[in-house]
Length: 367
Image (cartoon, rainbow, N blue to C red; front, side, top):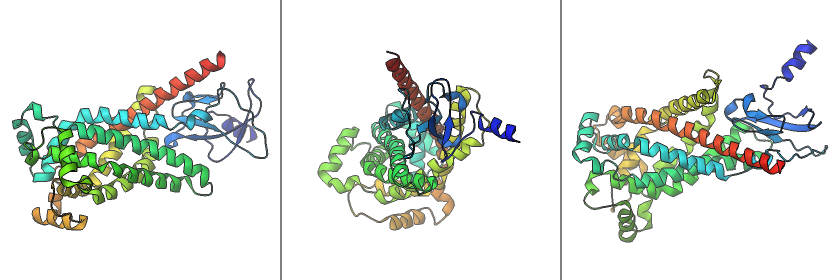
């Protein structure tokens, strides 16, 4: 029994939560490590115990124990794990790849949401406007989504690290949920980008606005700062809860997939977990986006609250719940691709930046 226990504990794939483990090697004798895996998955192949560093999915942090002195090694990764900028950069990069890939599908779905069209009529309408107008309005979502995804991933990880350090008695699930909610609230500060995107995508404003920057100028000069934030309430109702569910569930969802043996397999798992989760959340909150688009397509005039806007839309759709989901099939398909791209691209960029940083650290140590 003792032999089996020791054999189990010595296996590198064992994951220790909130425990300290004494590890020995020929390079150093005593080091206290607290190990956790990002997304609840431990990847032993990405962890270089020999050099005391960890890259990829697994991360290692030196456990600080006030009763014991802990030796620091040049290649210790606790410093680079505290970097904030990689999460922001990777989030923005993932958003750019996603937007350029899925914008035409978004435009068709938007027409369905705003005008209550069936998919074939919406496609015909977009095609009649010509290829030149196909990517009309792409700059605001590039700016908005790039900033939004940077804030979503970057601020979430930053808040999570801060809360984990300061709220030691709070469970990791609670700190993760709070961090996700805070990140979603900060995302809402960039509502003006989403606002201009809605105006540029609506055919009623095709003749009025020649480009994105003119739209920003007209809205700001003629209608004031408040007009940029029309539709803020449904955005807040959407961002916070979706962030909590996304960051809370993507780890468990990925863990039930077949274990990846290669980097390509790992990227495929990231794509599938992100795609399924993103599509389900996008469908769940689809009516919120319908109400948001209805509020934001208006330029000037009375500011109506979210409940009143929902009532107007519900009555316009014949008081049938099914009609609130016009465009949901295309939205679901687009979200499958979109969130798959975002999740897998984010992880790919994060691993690339992490690996390059380890390389630089090791080269610096050798010199």
